[in-house]
Image (cartoon, rainbow, N blue to C red; front, side):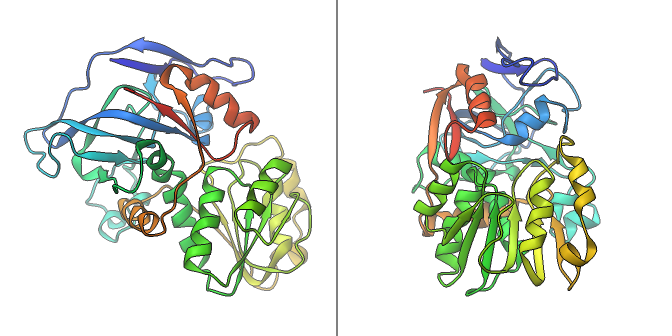
Length: 343
């Protein structure tokens, strides 16, 4: 089968083509696995974190990709949840132990044996992938394969982030950074909280214009002060400056939710600007988002089908995965980037 393979880590600026097209053997199935014939795979900023070593895969080479949509091509001996031809999706959570206190309490995203698709196991930048049946999700008929792909990560983690803000209808929400996840959160808010106002902070004027198109009541640069204090803010950026700036815009008792798997160290010195009275006093909170659970993905897919919530996307061929990654790095295109596989 064809796959785009990551052989070594390094800066995308120094090596703009980190993935190489390769012929790999078909995946082998464990008893409870299904074989997915991949039709589409979203491209995520987390893949840049993997390539550049901020969240490195435990082994190389590896097939990246954790926003996977396809059809069931084969079932393992004990896999009875799906049948051949069923359309399924696979998100960031590839597996968890199912036995620890976190798994038993519904917090499998915190499991010490959490395994990530496209990092700890080969993912969807390939024609086929294997996955445990319990970690695959039915895809609502509302969505095409390309539309469904970004929902499996950008959408699901955005859903979890919004839930963690504890936002109520009529309150103000801020979004710092406005990429694939941010634009889906804005659409969710307009459906779930019709009386909530959304304020967007983004450096790129095109992103700010996009946010206004989708219903943001105000947009500004990262350092700008919102016209009103905000009850909650979701940060989806990979750096520290927006965190400090966001805290200034929080209302007393407000919560900042950081939706990022890693923060880069390029501007870590900006944390020296953090002042207790200006940024943290009056019971402001900071909460991080760690991965997603299967429940997050399934609840979000149901919500997205009800709205219906369809992401803005731009398509690339599997062989153009490096181009998609560079476009995401330079923010040349808006919305989600999706690879077409087995087209």
